[in-house]
Image 1 (cartoon, helix red, strand yellow):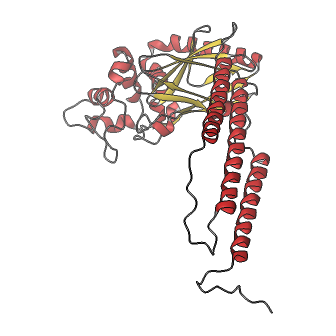
Image 2: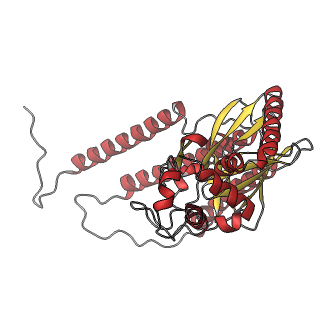
Image 3: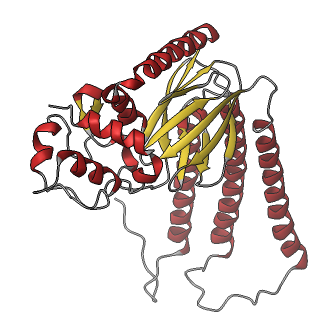
Length: 358
């Protein structure tokens, strides 16, 4: 028949009980750490990178995580040793011996972390220098960010698109700028993230290694439509990329030929100016939900403001969006700079297009 450990006159459990508890705690801690390491090794934190630059960044991340794990284990080991070796004994109420400085220990715990930090910093610099090394045959893409869409211009091919297409295994040189507020260009699968600034060009490089479509996300809170500021980068074979370029150039030529039709030009402006990110419009294949849907707009515009024509109301709603707030929608939802962003001729085309939506 077992009995609970007896207490001494002071009410404390004997030393054996206290030592056993400490050993159990140590064993549980070791098992938890080992289990965490096993799970982490067999279940990578990051998805597989799909770019050359991303592979280098992942290697740096693994190196940093490995160093941090070793440091964690060593520190926890010293902590457990200190608990067992210097922990208060049940039968000892006296103060511990005074602790004085140890120059050698102080030097070690200052020098070792400094060496580790310097090493990680040096490796980070090396990776950054490698991934931002330009190649002679790099494809140049000029990225423009604005509330709440991305636009991609290919100067060599003289074409503009709302999603990025690139050939596999060829470096892409991104030159990025914003026309309004700060945005941030992030391709999670390629481990590339770069702030996009107004009145300043930021540059980076990506080289896709696997064909497929990968999301582009803005990671800088840039306004009410921030969550829908998305696009994608399509990595394809060189032949498919050339075919895409040819199709886009044909489309651009057709659009130029149709420029005399303001309504057709207006549809292109609607999609390229980011209107499709916030408004739903079947004719433009837009499914935005932040702003009011624009199907049937021509029927409601004439009655929005008494004494104001549909054309004047529509134009003012574009260049001064807070002048007339549609019921159920907050102010400051729409970017305020379309009057500066679009030329007068383009504004006329956009107004004409919207008033064709019956």
